[in-house]
Image (cartoon, rainbow, N blue to C red; front, side, top):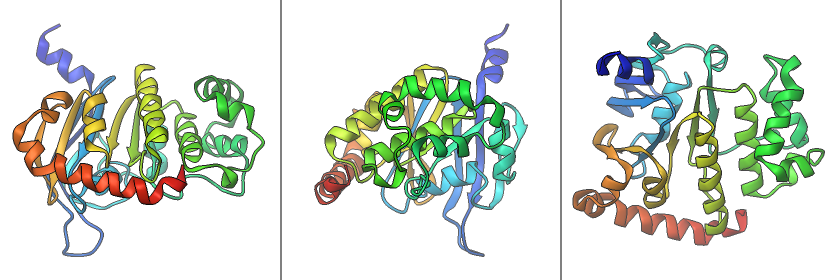
Length: 260
């Protein structure tokens, strides 16, 4: 098989020249491009308002794409309904309101598999192995959990459909440094099971340390892209983004440490 054919076969997600926004006539994304290959962990970083979360929501059909396309394994899924995207193998974990607080952990996982309820026992068993803490407290109401624990529930619920691609929106936001580290370790563990992950992250340095490749967005456009560790050591990226982003993260973590 030629190198070109191999690359085409392994390309899981391709966003090409995506322009999108929430309000008529106002674009948040202005021609974003992203590629994710099978088994990759992709990071998306950038300043506040750069369009990072909007890009994830556009991939998941939550924001109207006005120009450009999104493809999943070569199939055009531009502006497809979210329920269809879940069936096709895309999972999404939002930054906030990502659990059903009045339901137990186990019931949250059931909600993640509402399209295939007969598979619950086998899929839940895999989640208990991946998230042992959840197994021990499966009957506990999700609303009583800490921020880090709720994040684990949200990830597990999104994984119940056994997605090809997992979209994570700011998974470490509001967590203490210890819980942030746990979240990054868990994210890498999930990725090593074969799930392609596209992650928007406020902790830019840590994100670049663990991701295979990364995109830096600025004002809705691609500013830089490349291997995570190369971007982490790029003088221009450090000067323009990492210093400011790191300061913002440290301040936010100090203010919201109680959310752990």
